[in-house]
Image (cartoon, rainbow, N blue to C red; front, top):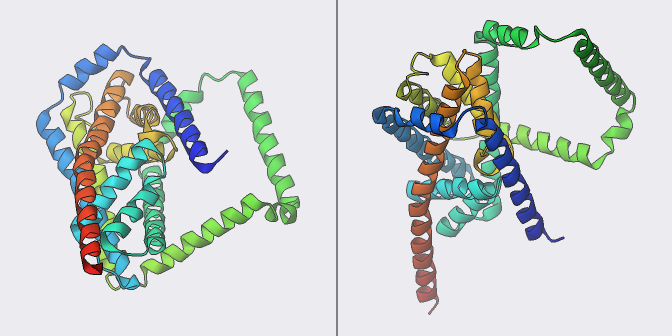
Length: 334
């Protein structure tokens, strides 16, 4: 099986999985009831959320340009921005392929070596991972009582049989952990462990690169700004729906964390996983399933539509400009 066929099969399988998850995610409520909730959303808050989404993508392009400086290259903001959008657009169809498409587009527009651009994307992923971990820790600390009450309520009706099963599973995991420790020398020689080690080393190298930037302060500012805009994009949607208008900043952070986790799963566009995980996060704040599903579908739809609409323009921009570059190169060689 060649790589192209494998990619297509993986995409189809994960897309079908996402569709199944989406179906069961909204199965608890009548789709017409969800649509009635969404129709009541206030447009002004939706427009503000869209502006935040555009600003987050622009900031990502500006941050990417800072990463190019130590490599001795400079890209226009427009080229970087459209490359970022095309990367997101490709990810909606083929998960993770956007991480290749984005540097490929900018390489074509700016004549920067592709492999060097791939390295900068890796650094960006390291920074995003760090921010995700920080958000998770902050939420756990701030919302510890809410999270504890949620799990206490979830497990209060567990009978003795289930407790025995959970206990057996826990002991089994501890046993496997002890066995893995005893056989660690053998495990370290496994190919997958070597790949994991290489990946972690790459992450550490990426972190070191950040502190070698000429504008590391501005880089960190853009990084923070991106995540603030991600946060505000979903936070402002709270006010668009009556059932979530009372929620505060901590709930917004929880939605950001659950939404980010949903998008990490290799399903095109986060289809299904977002609609399943975000309402689960809102359940921590006693938001009923109908409202939670409506919020998730509205927010996710806005994200997808924003990328799709801007993405069409970005693709046209890339085609026109790349053809112009090709034409100029041909003229210069004649």
